[in-house]
Length: 494
Image 1 (tube, rainbow, N blue to C red):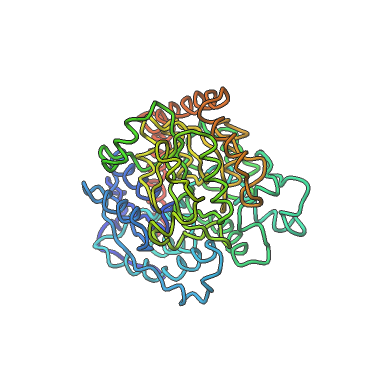
Image 2 (cartoon, rainbow, N blue to C red):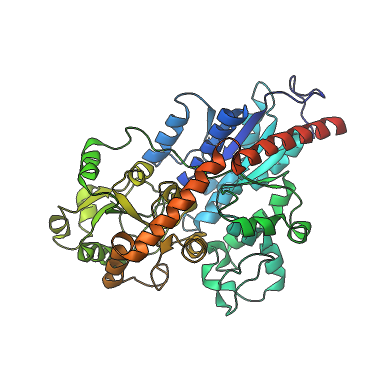
């Protein structure tokens, strides 16, 4: 079935392209989509409409949407999030499977919203979880792209997963040998992304399905820059890899992060940070969804105290059964007194001079951008990773879920901007003595100083990539020109 529109349907390619972007739920998906939209408007003359599935549980989510509308660079259309019960999934199902199911349920709402627009968009750009919407681009007769807002190494593993699914017997996590990816660094079994941990689960089937659907698009956008992962990007573009997996171009468009706000810190937090020596504060945060067990939370508290270093800690209620337990419940976690009750007795009083506890949420980019911050204890989500690099802050890698273990290995072993515990925090409790050592290493010891110098070098290459003439700027410009050619081809075919 094809749809006819009254405008933008002639043989002529429009001079000002109108892009429709779709984001799935969660800060980790919303931020990259919003920032891509801003870049398309400001640097490449697009008009942009962003369609957002709201979780309506996060203060940060509301602020991100509000900031995107002031000044009004983008049109924001909020779509009602599908009822999880309507998907037939249990609330105990994995976050990955729930996101995939909710995006699937939203397809008719998104399609209706597109049809209600005064004029057809000229291009469709979909979040990774939106690959089942690629058919809408075919239906409307417009180019369609998939935006993978994480690393090139993760993309390589994802695209290669249908081949691995056929070739590998048994569970990936039980293997003794790494998973080979053509032209790329192999992936250790313990580093595979969560959906690959159990091949009998729904999230694994969704993961492989997404990998099979990505090649149906006209291109892939990646939130990286050329200098960050040159070898992996070369492998993705190699005919041997692409010929068997995906024939569409890979465009590097990053780093795209939420910018720090000039007055983003509340007065008390700003004044406290201003009093601290330069690069002396550790910022500890586990993203919008990350949670620790009660036992691990206590060990972290003791480790911070024993280190005798300054810190800011985003404290969230511990959840024993899930490391991503706050993903759908951001902002829900009890009052301040309840949260503080999980800390060791007397911890707040003993650390009052050197530490700040922020319940549930904090302005992460604004904190990382302050010159007093010298280290980031992070879950290694890709947004947080880019925010840390762009602010010249080395990391203590503390991966919890999703592709974070792979990210942590990349940060520590390939680019040398992170240290990490000996054992994966997702597998074993990290003790207070090791945490104390890691904190001191990142803030005061020689190894930390080396990493800080390295991350500042990366920051410089990242900033150059997105400026006019930089690799990411030019990559988006090529994507625009390729899109125009594709529009002409589609129109000519019709």
